[in-house]
Length: 145
Image (tube, rainbow, N blue to C red; front, side, top):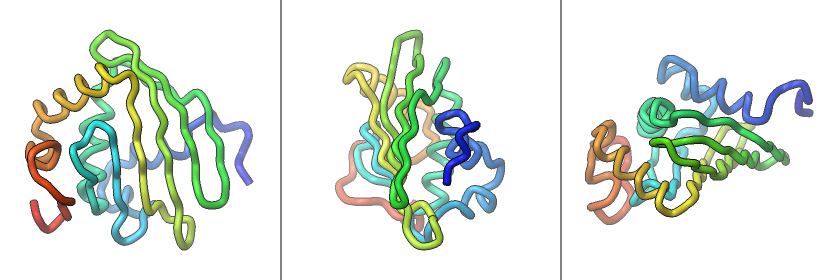
């Protein structure tokens, strides 16, 4: 049962804002995967996903979740915001496994131009290895850093 007094995305934001990797990892399965339209390939592992969100949460001028839909297996979060002074929107899909641990995150950015600009800025910040975004083929695991 979802607490209807919570704002859309409140539970997800509480996870993303956890200050340590250890606290963040409590919400995830052993090898979660992040697939995002701003990445050249998926990221696997809690440490990589934590690093991604530590970087991206400071990149938006403004962001807010506007709609949340839940089932036992997934949560769908629609969001709207501003990045580099221009409107951006998207959807974050969380998929759960055993003990309601997050197994997969799918993150979509719109419009296309903003998706590209966000990806470029993410690479510019060098939070993750540049090649993990756009230049290597295949999936990078935490132990390939």
